[in-house]
Image (cartoon, rainbow, N blue to C red; front, side, top):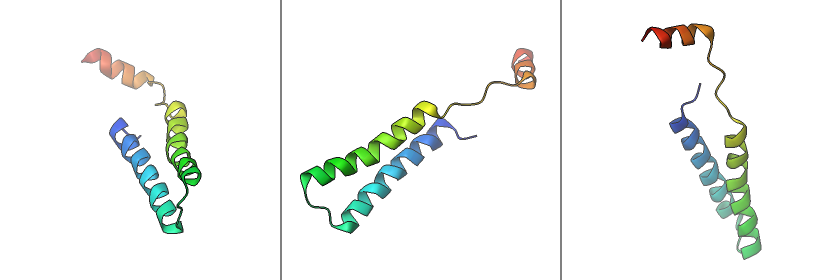
Length: 67
């Protein structure tokens, strides 16, 4: 399971990779940079909304109750 900190690092790494790929491909126009920005931001936002932690198991519930 990924912690929230690791998920955030993954999203930031995605944005950096997309921006570096855009720089390497030689994008110079504003509309193309807007498209790159959308590609760098939208997928992590969608992944964050769907990436949920699994439900707590019975053994985890018992362990938490004993504490």
